[in-house]
Image 1: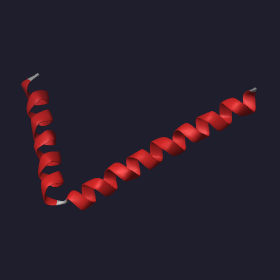
Image 2: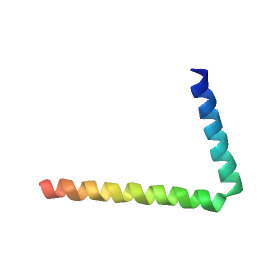
Image 3: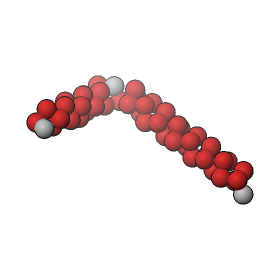
Image 4: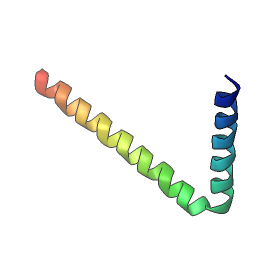
Length: 52
């Protein structure tokens, strides 16, 4: 179990390092993820509407 805790802390440290050193890249990553979620939600809504 301790290995999982260490891996989690390393991942958090990497994300923090990336955000502080590459804020533009981090913002693009968040925007891309948000666009993907919006697209997926739109696709699900279209599917549900097609069922009705």
